[in-house]
Length: 93
Image 1: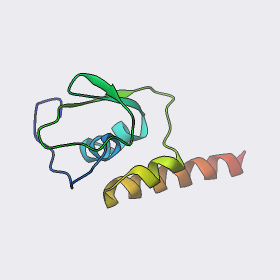
Image 2: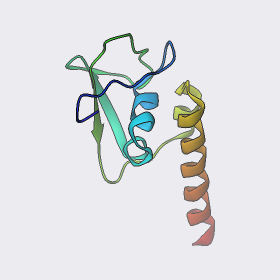
Image 3: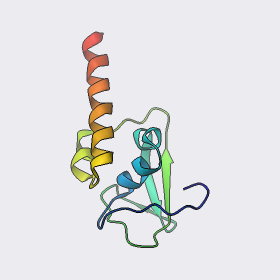
């Protein structure tokens, strides 16, 4: 976390899981991640002690692929909710 707190995640969790564990808005605005100072793909499995930096962009949005990549139920729930909200906006226009 920004304060250096440790986030407990399951084995093979991804940067997506980390971002949603910190805050749902952080996950929803995620565009990439650095693990131990190196850019990594969204499906990279995190290991114990990894330092994760989430890269965000205001216009970023989660995708269905993220739902398949995420390992934690919390991340999947937030991704489904964000996708449903985007679907409502599209149908409402």
